Length: 139
Image 1 (cartoon, rainbow, N blue to C red):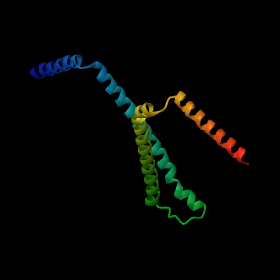
Image 2: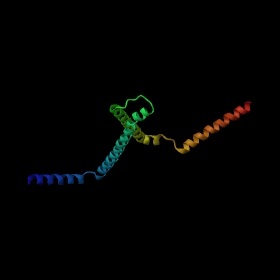
Image 3: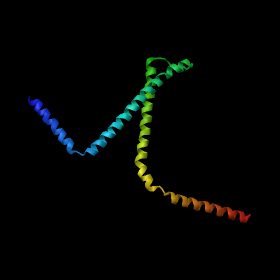
Image 4: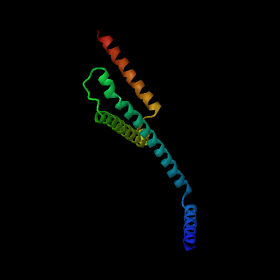
């Protein structure tokens, strides 16, 4: 009987603590968790598919006349190599996306406005026209 009362007391304590925390931050954390879990599931599923396709490589290569041995270890090695290669590729591209995303505010800060860009482009075009006129006059 004492265990159930202690258990209920712990649950009610957790619920009151949950109410007092910042619900917006907790919601954002949950949202990020769901996205990361979904992306991880996608990567694992694709790695399994690529591993299966990679495992078929020694069989197809043998049918085409290449001297790759058809053993369980070679098939598993190709499957593992394909899956690990895909996971490595996914991690690198994901890291690059995170870096691009984190540097986006700096890109906006240092980017010239369209008017300035157009103004500089106009000046360059005028300078090129003046140079052409000077060349034509000297001829």
